[in-house]
Image (cartoon, rainbow, N blue to C red; front, side, top):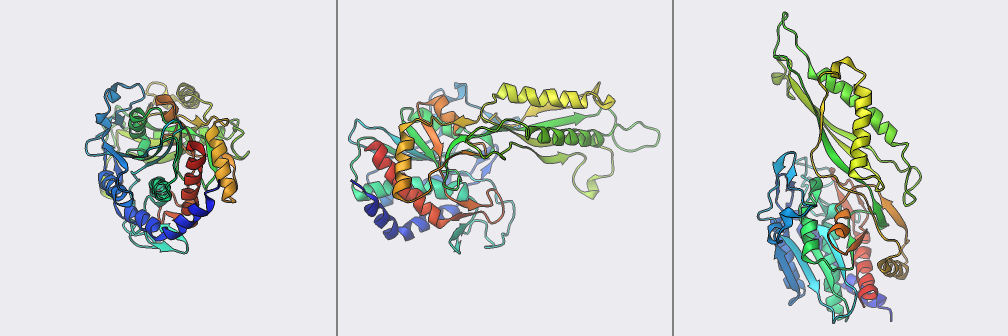
Length: 433
């Protein structure tokens, strides 16, 4: 029996509620601000909203340190740039629609935290947290990454509830914390809380492609320190880290070009490539008032991407061997080689089991909605690799269309959000029914 007409009718009837819920969530600032974060107001909003939208649902609001032994878990990574991450008052929310038993379970897993707005005023709407709509797009920090997707999971549960669909298996919607900046500990906590869920859909931005692979990577810091006194003086030798940092930057550029030669997995387009992205070169301050002396140290922050077939050890060894070969030829580095260290955890790539029965249910949902079904590799790193490492849960990335991720005028396309909710509901009916 097809539920397509009922699902389409529910989404159309509740369109205003859907958009208002996402807009209100976007207006709540939930920025990830290492070593802490401000997700709590957004999680509390969703907690109350779930109670309002479908009373009697099972809601679980807990913190990372409520999970016994989580800090001793081998996948837990407690620091960022050498500082201890802070998890007090950063709750995780899980809502469950209980089945009658004997069926497979499904989870819609999103994250509440966003990157900062970076600018006081945007262009389409001045307020970076407006949640306003123009030409079929909703704008605001976190719209596409990933409040629209996160809210969609909870709204899909409401749709199932309102339609009175009786399922055998449980359906979950969750909102974790600290996904940005290589956090992942929120996802680890959620998986340890409910380790037996069969499959999860993570609505990171995928343009509605079915993401069955993702890349990995890590942020690095390379530091140059000189033994000279710094300052100024015509009769004093003043070794300058700026020159060495420039040579390091050029070597990193070479490595980035070399990455273009790596074998591309078959889930990606042939022209896909991983990158090394240099974010910051710093030494001696950033203003003219700070420029009156030769500095004694400096650093570069950069991001190294890898395909899922490379392990952390292989990726690190490849990078460091290359840098040693290039810089080791320079006399400036023979007795004072730069220090390379990772700033965050290594985010592994992920490959979904493409024979998993959940993908068959997802395909059926796409066919019912006349959407193009395409399994594809996703060109960014996420927390999804942690799912199978911590629980039995396999995962695919399926999220709405949008643009300017982490940038000015970030937006999500409304029609794709509505299709995402429909797809989630129809997949749950088939997979958990």
